Amino acid sequence: MPRPFDGTYRVYDDWIDIKATLETAGYRLPAVYDGPRPAKETGPGYHKSISRRLLLDITRISDNRQFVAKRVGHCQASLALLSSNLPKDPRNHCVPLEEILEYDGRTWILIMPLLLPLGVPPFDTVGELMECLRQLFEGIQFMHEHRFTHGDIQFDNFMMSSTEMFPNGFQPTRTTRTRNGKWFHAPRSTRTRLWPRYYVIDFEYGWCCDFDDEGPAFNHKADYTRTPGQNPFPNDIHFLGSLLKERILEALLPKHSAFKADVLHFLWPLTLDMLHETPSLRPTIDDVVWRFSALLQTLTSSQLRQSVQRYSLITSWTSAARHSYRQLKYITLKVPPMPTKVPPPIRCIPPSLQSFYTRPLHDDEDDEGVDPKRRKFRELYRTPAHLRDPAEVEKLQPKGPRRMPLEELRVLQAKTMARIEGLEAMLREQEHEREEAANANAKATQDGVAETDVDLAPPIPPKT
Image (cartoon, rainbow, N blue to C red; front, side, top):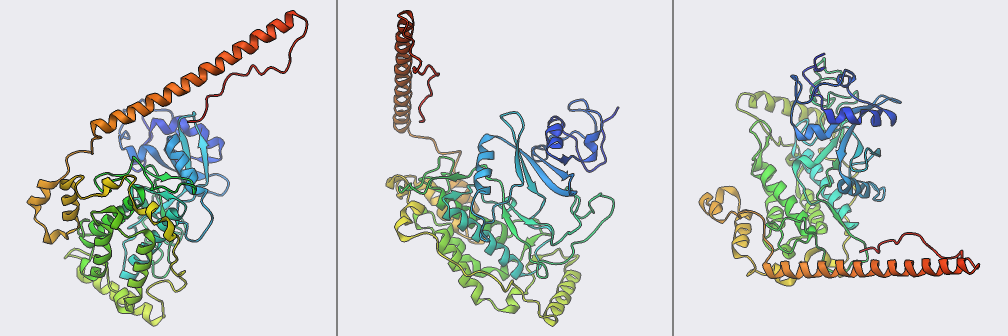
């Protein structure tokens, strides 16, 4: 029998294997998974999209609510669990986890609420975009306060709650369709009428540490081209600056969804400081939140109501007319351009821990002489696109990841071997003690005096 396919869903064998686990937990897969198991890599529905192979929309049987299931490994499941265990606070914008299901010991399934992409529906006014950035800065500040970094801050790693725009649900693969996929529908309203909540997702490159650590933070997964020294906190700041510069201020998105950079020029000073080539001179997330809050105080109501979306020439007149009509209606109804109940900014990083959040592990890794070519490239990257020479950018473009120096690699190998040898010596000592205890017990048994208090349990390797 051919593979069930309705033009919207694509059937993946990985989810067919996990279907029983999800159904046992009380979740129902899309109807196309109810058919017989198809042959691998055949049929019109086969597709090798990694993102869709890892994500699948499901429905909870008890209340018919939509969720998203994501297949992850042990490391990402642990980081997601850590993010979900952060204190319940309005400033916490980490995506909530409904539950975590274990599949086969190597694969875990994260059950999360069904969210909307950050740009669906498109932003209408400057105030809507500013509220989105305010919540995202607030969420990253809350993570940094609890010694947690993201490591991969991108436009696609932020999502938006869907109940405000689509209270009756929507087709996950096509947000413009109803939940059953048969009818077209429009969002219930704009963000100005129903302010949504924004969430941080995807902690694959995340990092966390205990509050007892006092030295400068270090994460080997931090991008060395962005942050020499690989302190994950300035690395997040650089990611945020790149998001503002590339996706908002320089308008590198397609023309039908790009932002009007000329109405957002006030973000340039903060963005350039966040992209400083020296990581220790970048502002902390506290500084970013306070400076952004001060910028919002300088904007007038007319500036916040300006259209922020750049439309094509074909639809520009009609889009401008619709926007003007909406804003006149909101002014008449006294709808504010930004939420009125916004908590004031706070500082969560004490002065005594500034070096932990800003300095590299080794002071020489933050020096100008470490890698002049990469440093020059970071300096050039801060320059707005219309002011820099493309040929010079191509000439200074870093080629490949940073390679560890040979001497540093030898030191690391020596430390690793010493640790392994110490562990082997400890295991041999434990084995010798067990043999001596067993021989003593056997001798005592032969003499008629059995020793019952000898622990013959297998040795437990020490934690390293």
